[in-house]
Image (cartoon, rainbow, N blue to C red; front, side, top):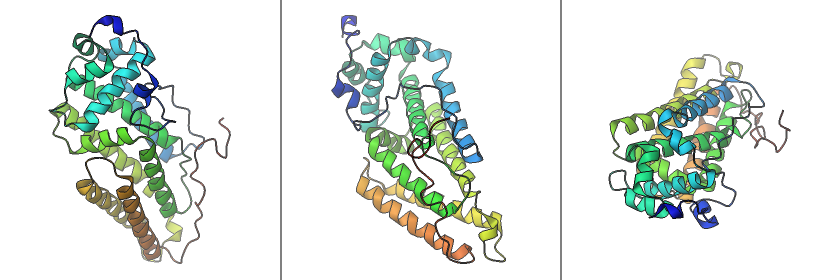
Length: 286
């Protein structure tokens, strides 16, 4: 493909294919707005955000950052659609450059090699999804089980909005990748569980039945959540099936209700109900 096509702007179908109408461009990465509530939950999420923004800011991607946003989006969308539907080993850079309307030489100029392209794309997707998560009001007090249930529901809604990105992430967690990329994916999974752990550790010890140790209770909740996540990921369809994940969400809810009944002194009202809302629905940004 000749360079003369490089200045053509991607059409709406190229920008929106595989995602909802309200999708945020993966290249649209303004500085993260500080969360309205400063707490350990939000600070942990912001740290994840910053760690992957640091990857995108590396010198190796300077040439890619220098091109216009339309062209960036076109290249990332082409790569996303290929990597979301093929294993890493079988993904064709020829198909990516054809869809992105650039030469293969330019692709390698921007990213170095196929692994460099994947690393950049993966980091962009993580940043996008973390921004989405931090757009919800992440509270650090109240009924932790209700907070966890609402977080799971928020993840489901995010998956519905970013179907192609979700397909890509699901494949990334199962794929056989080069060591550098495998380490990157494992790091993101570890950070996700650590973020979840921070939420779980907000468990109010005063609500526990006499004799139940706070640390042991939070560890049990973590084990249950990680176990359910690993179970559903192991047998999930290769492409995101919202009905499947809706069913999984309801099962997670039932386990959280069970743990609440086991650990709490008496049935709790949902003190956190309604506290996890999209930023801007109830508050003005400060």
